[in-house]
Image 1 (cartoon, rainbow over the protein chains, first blue to last red):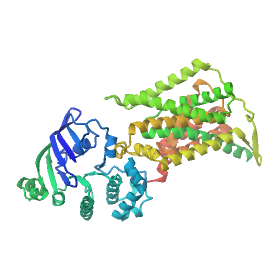
Image 2: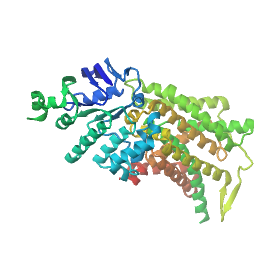
Image 3: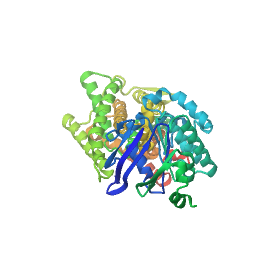
Image 4: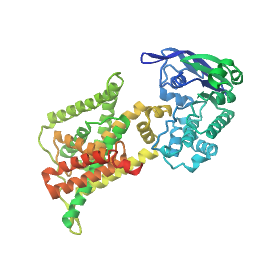
Length: 234
Length: 291
């Protein structure tokens, strides 16, 4: 479904990614893990077209994304739930959800999608007329995921959805991601919470200082010595 | 007491038109994060279009709004697409340079009008110019009242547009978080163009509504840049509702200044309020509604 082929990405003169390659197949739940500053967010931003690779390319459903403008990736079925949620703070919960369903295909199902999201996150239904900026951190994360789902995406990319949340909410978020995946939506998850992510994903990549250093099934990486030492502290 | 009410109503009616012009500026400021210093010149162009419609073709100023608004929408789109957005693409250019560019645009527009129409003051005389009706012993100018009502209708229509349509929501989303808007599939480049067009059309509407009340000359735009800027700061940058209240406040303040202090000092009142707001309420009226 998604193929990232040997991309080099720069911020001005500074190189952030070195020959990063990864594949996500339909229905998979792939995690991209690593420490702060390893280049995880950079990778996602390049996939959604906010950044351009200097070398290499990205294919989605067989189509080369090199010359596709960033705003068109949503239309193609990629929903990107960005780091720090990036909601529209002065818009209501409902308006934020509507903003997630602008492309034609998603717009046709707007009402239906919203009902689906309200059953997934009943809290959001209670607060539908409240401004997003006034929600709690957990509610904001639910809304950010909900806004991504409004697209009826083929691929849902989540950038650190557990960041800044209380431990019981972290469990909740991972449960929901699993559930979304089981409904047939392909997931690409970026996380610092390596333990949680490895436990739930089907495949994982470890990114270290801009390079992919390890890849494999989640369960296998859990028993990998380097992973245990560097990320799990065991 | 009747002088007080007279002053209040006069200020309120004029303030409504100021608000419409300032809402145009605040929209552009919200999305582009720049002050459009050509905004007054766009008001002026709107006024001249109305003048030409009336003078050469006998079209009533209030009908001419249907000509001046589309014309300025188109002009605004062109300005954004072929000058301001071109500048954004250049790296290492500071955002201030876009503001400087709007000064250049203002000069070009102003001097072009001077070339065509000269620097003379012009005005339009309709059948209702100078007519008024009475509420108790307060006289209300008919053209001012019509202009106020139309300005409020447009403000309300804009509010509906911004909250109930996908393009309107996309404009607000782009103003609040441009990158997130892109991820939602918003073509933000197109949104900047539409927004500048819309802001210009509102400036034109304000200009047209002023024609039956005011006189016009090429440099009149400067006054409206200053007023719009004051209103935008008063209301809180990027806030439509704030701009509405800011506009009404400025209109009323100027009116009281003119009546109770002196005609020459009425603009000073606006600037004094501006400074007071900056000192004590830097977020404008918008900041009062939320903590």
